Amino acid sequence: MQTTASPTAYEALIKPNLVRLLIQQPVWALVFSAFYKSLDMANRSEMEQHFGYWQYFIANLIASGTALALGGLLWFVLARHYWLNDPAARVRLENEGMYAVLPLPVAIIHALAMFIVCAPLSYWIWTLYMDWTGAWTPLLLSITNLKTSMVFNAFASIVVFSVDIFRVRAHMQRLRAEKADRLHVEAQLQRLQAQMEPHMLFNTLANLHALIETQPATAQDMLAHLIDYLRATLSASRTGALPLREEMDRVMDYLSLMQIRMGPRLQVSVDVPDHLADVTVPPMLVQPLVENAIKHGLDPQPEGGWLHISASRRVHNGQDQLEIVVRDTGQGLQAAATKPAQKDGHGGFGLQCIRSRLETSYGSLARFSIDAGPDQIGTMATLLLPAHGLQAPVLPPTNAPSP
Image (cartoon, rainbow, N blue to C red; front, side, top):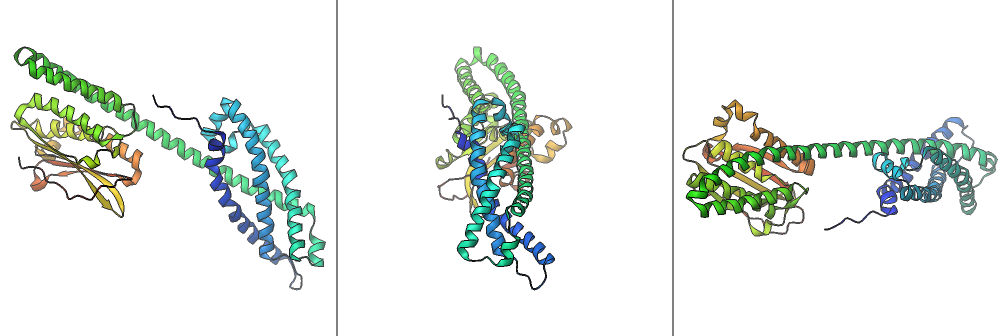
């Protein structure tokens, strides 16, 4: 059994936040430099010489860099301790983000300690910079002191951390909402499987009962396909993605059962090239389309018809995409729409579940459509999915054989 390695403290605490924290330092330095310079210009006379914009920028950048380096290091030491030893801290990190790892009293003490240490240190570094550049003037020396610098530092720290705390909480809220959506879709998938399998299983067992005495070899073949189908169904329910090859194996087992039941009324054509076999897809995408085509398109017709399944590669806007088409020569959309019992039945729920799974797995990068077949004969369902890393050549679509 393959196990997933547990994340390290760095991977759990630092890595998800490092880029955001590094980017926002110069951004906030620019914002506060503009703010302080505007206050400076509004409150001084024309003859007075105050700090330049870039001197404000360097001061803010030193302050934010010092706070990130020392305060971040102290936070990591404390957060790592709680993350390793307190299960509640892990839960808070997962639900609310980095600022919730420390208990509130510890977080307040950390913030105060960071300010007491970092504000004077950043002021001292900035004065060294001013000495090094020779930027001091008598007026600047007279208005520069540690007390004023700490007031400005405290104001900037409160603004920066307040905004970042709200950003992190909003991000975690979005993640929780997305997780809830995924769980909802998975529940729909399980409901779909629960609806399909008993119905199909009972019909198959009834056919087996009828075939055991009259056609024992056919009954054995049917039972073998049923076992393979149920084994694949159980495996698919435990994974979020699987190769197209495995999805098609499951579909072929189902079609074999249907061909035994329907006999020559069901003609099947499959065109899935080998170079597409390893492209991963969410489970239970093709299966509902095939069952929908048979149940609502082909089986109601006394003469039955053709079912054609094809897969091909498409390139759209420079992105590799996998196109899966399930086409039948059944009674078509208009005939199915005239039967109210079918509109809200298994077929409608199965197709709705497919749309939900595509939205959860791919967002706006996937498309699903159901249209009338060529010459208004039958129905054609089309899935268009991202196929990242696919190196196969672009192939022209293959037409289904004429029924």
